[in-house]
Image 1: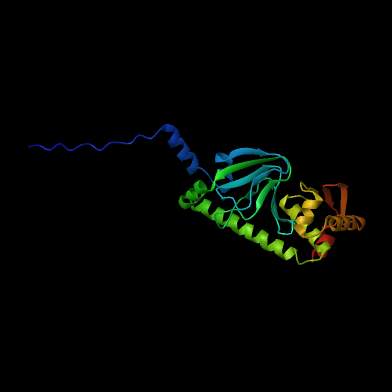
Image 2: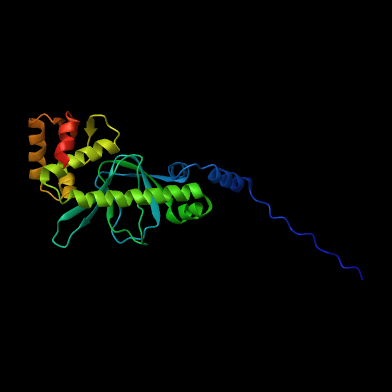
Length: 229
């Protein structure tokens, strides 16, 4: 008796799937991956993007506008943990749930990608994994700097905040702040009156200039650096 051996079947992959896989393999960075595969979403000013305690299923990148991370304390006070500006990624968590709520400060455009898809890619691509690790370390450093900022004097906190915003916005002198003075106060653990009074004092000494409520011009960086403490 002659036994016929069946030829192995060949699974045909749809050309669109092949192209998608090729596109992923061509991704050079975490940011470019989000740019290519992120879903664009728009949020109005003071709109919640996600809430504290919700599952951390997505990662986000600010395209336009700005975002604040906040929570309401037991006594009703609002605590702001961080701000995110255009080009920055947020939503990274060490656990499965978000520890802060994310809100759009102004009308904002956000790109959204699934956390599971990004982690799967990081498992295959060492460069993406390294960049994800670097982004996580940057988040930790920002949190540490914020903690250290809160033990400084009111003037030192305000100055440190201005210098941080200038660095993150890659500004040589003029900063357009997307957040309100109340936001700044809640981030620095101060009252809005203290923030306003400190900015006025800095302007009076010519360290800064305040051409508009949310516009700050750094006139004397050396003096500000000395005041930062």
